[in-house]
Length: 507
Ligand SMILES: Nc1ncnc2c1ncn2[C@@H]1O[C@H](COP(=O)(O)OP(=O)(O)OP(=O)(O)O)[C@@H](O)[C@H]1O
Ligand SMILES: [Mg+2]
Image (cartoon, rainbow, N blue to C red; front, side):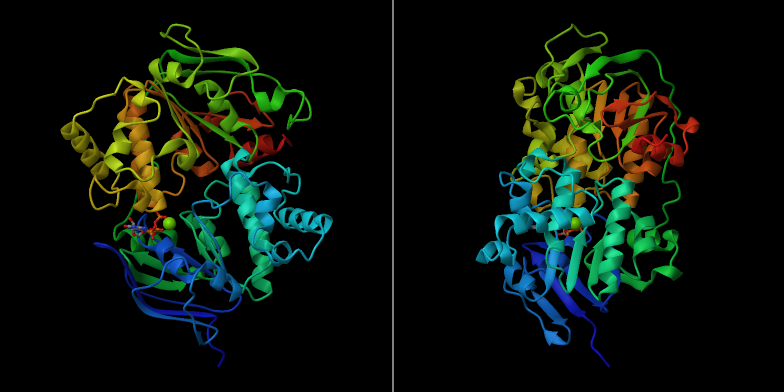
């Protein structure tokens, strides 16, 4: 009998006092898509980092095609055919898209191929994902998170591995890109590549996966065939309880307009050079009311983040104005916005958000903006109390409030980023992908929190690529397409199909 492609037995790993993995066993067959699920902090990324050579296990055995497997590092793992797409994007920010894609590939290392061939290979890898239009010469940091994710995946496709680990590859992809990624996965699977797929989107897991393993608190909580598992069963294995109400609705009624976006022009869509639309798009106008949750759907690069950034003053609008009702017409800098009660949760928690090496308590009570004086001095006791409250409310998995954020799992870092924004008094909240990387149970918790905020009169704008979330959470919804925002309509007046047609411009 042929051995499984991969066999892990009794794998354990501790970080100081934190036992990330207690004892995990897992088997993956050649040509299988094995789904790995579990709550934030369950140990998924840690297990995969052991496979990819980034961490050494404390105990346990690993075998690859029947041979003992103990990679000395990521390069060794890659040479043996194990590749990983990390949850925290790892692109070199100042290198171009092309350089990033070719980084570490044989052709680049040994200079086998000329520049033209290298370019064609990079372009071909992107084409598999339906993004061959991406500008290969732009630095990685200038792309949106979703585009960076595409570049990251393209890098691996250059040299298909024996085992491909994908840690939340779709956390910021839109439905259209998820389909393209699934087509690639299906092709790879057919050639015998084994894929380990981590995601918090259980519907997605059921579609693409053959078998699953559930991790809970560093241990295997269950395994089986996805065809025989209901979503409820998977959730129960993950959380140890039933999550009945995924989209809790709290009664709230929109009131007076608090944010008036008047004919705003977005730089990327109106500038003569580099305009993605190829023509100037219509300026954006809409109003946000107190107690309203407005959702914005759209494809990658449609301009949703551009809009939020323009409202918050991070980028200067090329036309029009954004009025915060009740605030003086201040300069449109982030600081001025912040002071007039606007809060912004960036999709990029690494670059603009968290201070990763600082304790999470500090992260909760300081922001790059908040530290501007208003919160210049904060009592340690108050800080500790606030941190402890949020850790409880959002079920953040950590040792205590003094733990550095960098040691938290991806989803728990996201919870801190959100908590930090909510800790500050803002009347208007701009949330860009607020539940990115957050597990099913905690998502429900966050929806309840957002509902609470709306009920207390706050105005909330939610950008999300996850349609069920937008439809379940929001009162009103608009769709962005190439820098143009559709009319805002009540959620009930939209269907998923209609949103997709508007997003793709085929409406
Ligand atoms: N470098 C580190 N130092 C200290 N603790 C760590 C480190 N890396 C991970 N941990 C801890 O190990 C546990 C498991 O984290 P891991 O990142 O594997 O979770 P995960 O299942 O991938 O969660 P998520 O769904 O949020 O990505 C967490 O409690 C985390 O805080
Ligand atoms: Mg993780």
